[in-house]
Length: 330
Image (cartoon, rainbow, N blue to C red; front, side, top):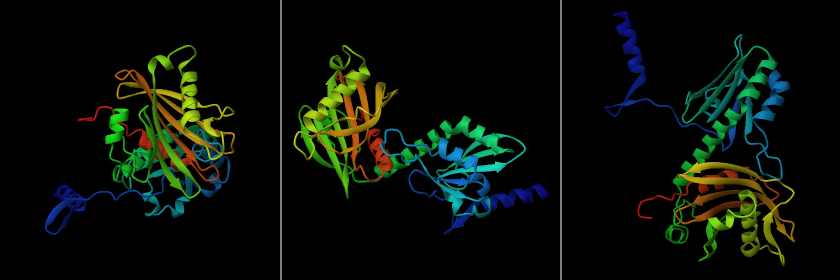
């Protein structure tokens, strides 16, 4: 009988009745700005070596930016003030003193979606070792979550009618209406642009034959050369003879992966206007498309050199990743 009463108590606590209907209680939506995380740690640790390591490993600079910007904005809470409101953050890292050294990741503990990382250790050097070991995983999980949130946000927006895009590129993509079509040609070349108060955010689409990219030197070198040739021909600056090109002083990063059974090259780096003083970051996905015998370039770049660019890069990547080569009735 006692066990029955306890079970009944938890049953009642789990279910709620509203307007005569029984519904399952659920977690509230998580909160927080994009690329933001809550860190629960004693002030003494935050202001010492452990805090320095957290800033080094977790708030590392964003790849490809000329100016250093941290990947994530950290809001630090002492355990004493880690209240119910703070627990609603989308990303939480908690450092707890413990006799045992342990690392855990739990999903949607206090809200949803939510990443809750728990690092337990007795000494500061053990915490730092945990950060050294797991920081790449922590950064990857948080970044993917933020990218997913950005994609969900874009999915709720009004997007461009993609008839023109389908006819020229042979795929679909979700480009918000606040990007306007600045230019297109039958080559094909498409250029979408979003105004900023002090610059703009840009998306461009173009292609080269596979035979052109896979010749002579390495594919990576040919991809950069092709990208720069398009910048010189199509993307002009305000000054005479100014055009967009890769910044030769900043080594770009390359990553290869598969998407929709295609080999994709992700390129991140910096661009500059030749014969001008404008510069900024870019992200470019290049799809090796055997069906059309082409390398399709989907490139985003930001022209806002005196402002923060991190969140614009996230938006560009979310849009680029929405490209779909196999949608029905394409």
